[in-house]
Image (cartoon, rainbow, N blue to C red; front, side):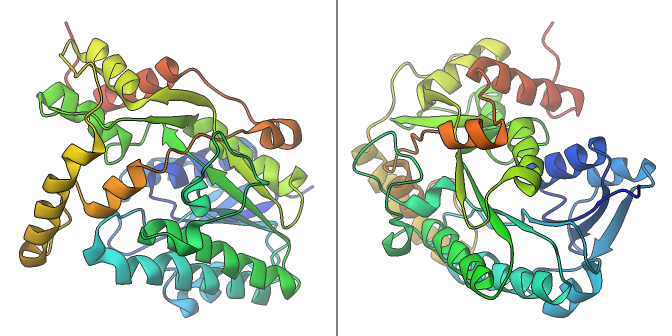
Length: 336
């Protein structure tokens, strides 16, 4: 019996690398899409496996998708996404998260893919009045003031449009993902702790999920997910202060004991946004990121656990895994 074929977008990204890795471990033949300008240093390590083929393209370029997706492939894993919270990047984010998803849906239909697994986000639910929430809660992302939340919701609308046209698709909604291959998301917080550049920590709590388990859920969704269904992938609920304190213990650094109220973050966010108008560069703190921090993503994952075998992992283990990778790759020095 020949190996099944999977096509992965966003293959050079944090989660995309995990999905490619788990697909190869599961015996798939994988075609991994990457942009010409993407950093391929980690993806290229998988090329020792002859089951991996790299394909240059861009989800905003429909012709490149049509060339890259194998005809009749078993699964299209649309993992690529723009996670910016900077208003200066809104137009690009909309092109990538909404138009890009439409292009992937169209290409999957045209190439007769057997199933699309869409990586969305819990952010598609926007602000929720009752926490924790599950898949039965109404999605409020479409009316959010945060462009990321709106575009993740609208990306799901594109997927459902494809389902109406005969596409078999499943939608996964991770929360805060932790793991190796991360130096720009939560890994950046660990780097900031080590550098002594974390004077404040946001308030509130979130559901944190393990990148390996999220990637495994993608493969399970291909075989066991119900078409048209959403699956929230949460895990361990913890405060951002708890995360920072674990990072502080690993690095032997001081971290704040309490979260900084959002009201105190607003002046800095407004100032940074104003400055970015001239620098044309995304600041570390923005108005949209402050609004999003107020939308605590505390979710229930019983559906994913029951139907996909999804597993929660302790927060300390997840932070340790990310930290160990940062050390192994030379982004952090080993502690004596």
